[in-house]
Amino acid sequence: MGHDGETRLNQNLELNHHPKNMQTDQFPKHHPGIWAVGGGKGGVGKSVISLLLSLALSRCGQRTVLVDADLGGANLHTLMGIKTPARTLNDYLTRKYETLEEVCIRTDIKNLELICGASEILSFANPLFAQKTKMAQSILNLAVDHVVLDLGAGASYNVLDFYLIAKYPVVVLTPQPTSIHNAYGFVRNTVYRRLSRYVSQKPSLQEIVQKAMDPKNNNQMRTISDLFATVRKSHGEKVAFYLTKTIAKFRPLLITNMARNPKDGNASRIVQMVAEKYLTLEAQELGAMEYDPLLEEMINKMIPLSELPKYSRSNLTADRIVQKLIGCTP
Ligand SMILES: Nc1ncnc2c1ncn2[C@@H]1O[C@H](COP(=O)(O)OP(=O)(O)OP(=O)(O)O)[C@@H](O)[C@H]1O
Ligand SMILES: [Mg+2]
Image (cartoon, rainbow, N blue to C red; front, side, top):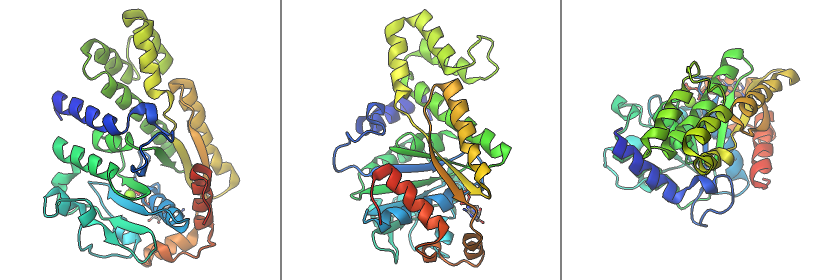
C-alpha cells in the first residue's frame, strides 16, 4: 500500500472510529460493536473463539454477523458445517455483489449471520487498498449489533488494520511458550501500527517510530516509554502527549485457549505483565477457555459447533466473556 493510500485509509477509518473512541460507548448508535479476534500464531483457536463468541452474542439477543476475515486461509464455514458456501467475500471483492449485506449467509441460529471467507482466490490474501477501505467501511455500516472478525494468523498490515477498527480487540493464545511469545509480539505490532498510522504524515516522527519498532534498535528505545521520551526531546511535550493518547485507550482482551489446568491461565497474565512493562498497556484478561474434547471431536466429524450443548463448558465460558464485556446474559 502506498503512503497516500495509507493516509487515506487512516482518515477513512478514523473518521468513523477515532482512537479516542476506542472501547468507549461514544459510537454513533448505528455502528455495530466490532470484535476482532487475532493472536499472531496459527492454530491457537482464533476461528473457534470467534464462533463461540458470536454464538454467545446471538444467544443473548444481539444481532451478530461473523466474518471470516482470514483472507489467506478461510475455513470458518467448515466449523459451521458448511462445505461450499453459496456466497463468499470473494463475490464482494470481485464486485459480483455490490454490498456486504448481499454476501451474508443466514444460519440456523437466531440472530447469527455469516460472511464466509474468500480463500479460493489467493490474490485476496492481499487485497488492494481500495478494497480494504471499502470493506472496512462496509463492516462499520452493517445494520446489526455486533460484527465479529475472525482474522488470519500473523501480523501483516491486512490483519492489523482490521484489528485496529475493533472496539473489542481480542487476542487468543495457548499456554505454550511460543504462543505467549507470539501473542505479545502481536500486541506490540498493533501498538506500533497504530502509532505509525497516526504519524504517517509526519516523516520525522515516522522515522523515530520505525526505529523504535526494531527491538534491537541502537537508539536505546527498549520500551514505549523510551520512544515517548525520545519524541519529547526531539518534538516537545505536546507532540509526545498526543502520541501517548493514541494508545492510551487501547486495551487488548486476552483469552488463553485450550487450557488444560488452572495454571495454564497464567499464560495471558504473562502477556499482560509484559505489555504493561514494555508498552504501558493495560491488557484485560478475559479468562481461560478450557480444552474441550467434545469440541475437537465435533470439528473432526464436521458437526457444526452451533450444535454444542448450551451448557457445555465452551459455551458457558463464551457466555461469561460476553457478559463481562457487554453485560448481557442469554
Ligand atoms: N477450546 C478448544 N478445545 C479443544 N480443541 C480446540 C479448542 N480450540 C481450538 N481447538 C482445536 O484447534 C484447532 C485449530 O483451531 P482454529 O482453527 O480455531 O485455530 P486458528 O487460530 O483459527 O487457526 P488458523 O491460524 O489456521 O486460522 C481446531 O480445529 C480444534 O481442533
Ligand atoms: Mg482460523
